[in-house]
Image (cartoon, rainbow, N blue to C red):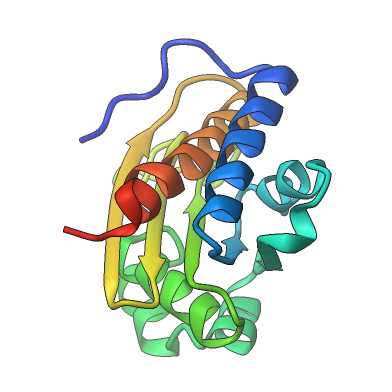
Amino acid sequence: MPSAPIAVPTDDDLYENAYQLGRRLHEQNLWLCTAESCTGGWLGKILTDIKGSSHWYDRGFITYTNQAKQDMLGVSEETLAEFGAVSESTVLEMAKGALRHSRADCSVAVTGIAGPGGATANKPLGMVWIAWARSSDFIHSECHYFDGSREEVRRQAVQTAALGVIKHCLQNNTIA
């Protein structure tokens, strides 16, 4: 289980993460798309805060409800019924669906429980699934458990998602 970041990222931290991600995408001539649930478009927001983001950020899907996940990303009704919206199966289908429904080379998907409600014994407050995919058939997912308020959980999820694109999809422009 990946550990949560020690400090909750500030607006400046998130901007710097987005700037570095955009620079790397642009250098490698790659396009990114996002599929967000619990972060509600915050990842897309920080990416589009960067001047020139239209040269590397294709689009974002905000799929807060199960129906939106099905309609916009093709997440199967069976997956949602069996595993729920906050699950590895769902986030993997979100990441793949974002690639299918865009012209991007890379995608990142986020789904989780930011609170204050919605937690269960098996899915506690702060549990967030993130997946990164690449059109070259690479896909990777991680489950994180973030501490803090709703905003703090969401900030940590946005930072982890953005930095994960660099780590999982852009390292040397190859996938191991």
